[in-house]
Image 1: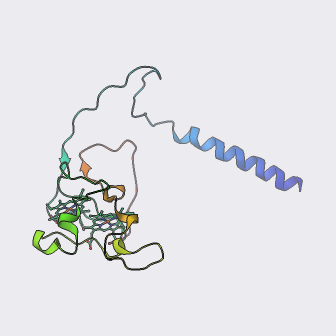
Image 2 (image 1 turned 135 degrees about the vertical axis):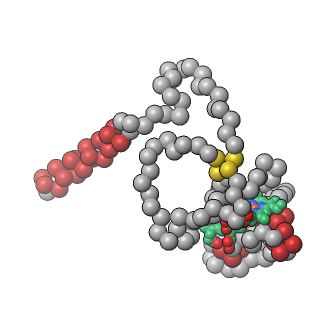
Image 3 (image 1 turned 60 degrees about the horizontal axis):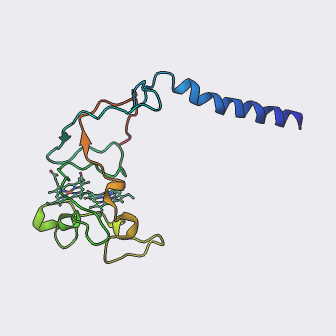
Amino acid sequence: MKKIVLTAVLGMFAVMAIPFSASADVTSLRGDLELDADSKAYEKRKQVTQKGGFERSFKLQPPMIPHKVDKDKITLKTNTCMRCHSAANYKKEKAPMTGESHFLDRDGNKLKKVSARRYFCNQCHAPQQSADPLVENQFVGAK
Ligand code: HEC
Ligand code: HEC
């Protein structure tokens, strides 16, 4: 019993220690500003677009958005992404159709309209910017 308690306590210390050691080289997005100081405005960055789309890092990755989306709107009443990506329009617009997975409800039933679980496209699909990564990343995708 004593051993279990000791292991649990040591485990807790180990977990608490991780954030301190891992954050040593990371600068916050706000830089070294005092907490009550106003942060500086971001420098404007251009969106990176790419004909043919971006390569995926793993099979089921939501592909990144390769075109401008400044004028697109996703509201209760309208989703302008579906003007090009819906089953009805994708051929005419030469756009890839939203995958079948986007038309399934949580019980796996096929729906006629895009599922509410996939309605907010930019929850998973993001446009890209030419920003340097905040921390070094050694992730290697599995194809
Ligand atoms: C005017 C038509 C149009 C609209 C509106 C549009 N798209 Fe696209 N989309 C395209 C076309 C065409 C491509 C293919 C581009 C290419 O491969 O060069 C594409 C590609 C994509 C891809 C990449 C797919 C892949 O497999 O690489 C994603 C993700 C995407 N769009 C998401 C969106 C989202 C999210 C919105 C709304 C915010 C949106 N699109 C609005 C036409 C459109
Ligand atoms: C919950 C996350 C999620 C949301 C929300 C979502 N997608 Fe996707 N999307 C994915 C994933 C994961 C894939 C890749 C696997 C697949 O096709 O299911 C994908 C694939 C795609 C593709 C490429 C299909 C192909 O066959 O190459 C397009 C285009 C796309 N999504 C458009 C959209 C649009 C438009 C919306 C909004 C109506 C949307 N997605 C909402 C996760 C999402």
